[in-house]
Image 1 (tube, one colour):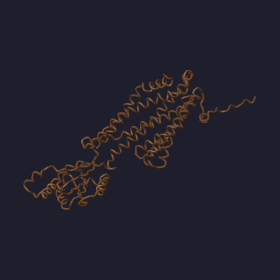
Image 2 (spheres, one colour):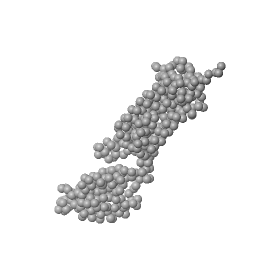
Image 3 (cartoon, helix red, strand yellow):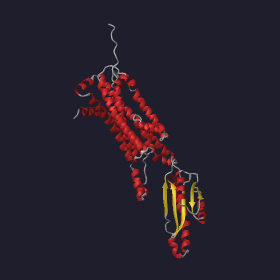
Image 4 (spheres, helix red, strand yellow):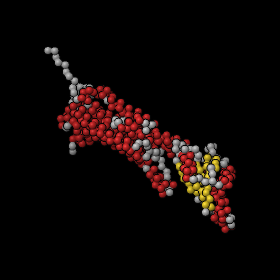
Length: 431
């Protein structure tokens, strides 16, 4: 086993061996799962219901005499659930259907109904918003007598057709999600996505600080002198980054596994819709799997980059009291990246958001925020990730040189000396 692997295993066990690490890991996973089920738990309290006092607007495309018959059927039932039927013509072409669908999704109407005469009588189709699915049984009751009347006329109202008139009415139902009309689940999705972004910032900062404190403690206790005497300094640095990063990755993977399991019903719902099994089209998940995978990817990129930077700056510190001053610059970069990411959430296509996606020290935060909004071109995604990988390689070389030069120094190293590698000149005695 290589020396860096031994150090990585030691650091990994040191971080994961304590009960605080385990408690934080489990609590974080349970919190993510609980938030994912929040829309299901609060939907009965906040979702619209049939008969709540506000009339449901249903557009009707049918011949005028059929619309009048349908309206007459709806009047006696209005006390149970207020319906507002609006006639929009005898039939709808494809453009009209698309417009009607858009009005349902934009919450202008609650649905639209079409009655079209056909060779076997009237054919009925109904489109409803997902939040108004409870209207389906009522509309079935309204449509049935009208369709039976149409069948009777088509068949001549002979006695032998009574059985045919009593057959169940085929009603094709489509459910469309509303855009922006479901504020509570949407707010919960945004809140959980914001928590993921905050968690990304906190995880990178936390484990970067862990590396910094480990380096400073070893310098103060003189353990670094023993390690450097037996192991090359670069391997010590690599072991620390890999070991502590592995502990952080394990914590992230546990939480993301819970997120994948919670979001799993989305796949079941998609398969159910494809097979025509509406009973499978139930999904409590609020975070799609690609977002969870993106969180894991950007944690790895952000942690690796900032862990190397934190290690380089921590090597310049001689005492623990000086750590806050030494780590001011990398911490400021993290905060600045978080601020740009919040702006990218509001305007994902702005010049600032695009530029932040391509600056490696900001990429993990800004690009993740833009991915949540679903507005990142593939070229910008590849460029941002690629530039970050290049920055990690350069940061590894910089951190290796800085750690090797400064790990055994018992004095504070200035930023100028850190970046130039040159020691400040000493004054000569006047003798």
